[in-house]
Length: 225
Image (cartoon, rainbow, N blue to C red; front, side):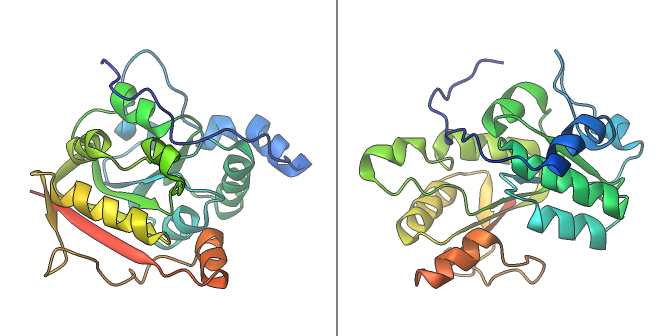
């Protein structure tokens, strides 16, 4: 599939890997990791079953997806993250909790969805606190744009749900404009703006940092028509 997006929404940082995280990547990846091959990912084969399926893009250190996988064993969870320390940390949590309903991908989410995921693969997609790229000259790097919103909608089953959150108001407004303009997405807000914070989402470190800085938090939710 041709890739339409050329500007990455992230900058890879070296980050300090702990010995445990390095060991997790070496030893636990064969159990909980998902490698990209030439074809599309076969999720029923990866999990060994057919079940409801949720994707989290940019899971950071895995606070949300780890908690969800622990409390909802009947749902299969796929997490995508480019930063290896966070991947290693989630692998450790998966091993500790024996989370057979969790698989991890360490790659650019845009490329994963465009090249390795069939349409109508997920019942829910979560994107919480993506990099806001607050400087105007960097707005082109923001993950949520019309092209990617169309990709997200395509990967949802009909009636599947897309959930977004940010602590940067200008980015929240952009998300709102982009998603409201997507004909495949229907806002779950009565006035097509923001929704209450979902009860299932534990506060992430990015959210807590934003609160310390006096930022608000804006949640959005959409259903695929």
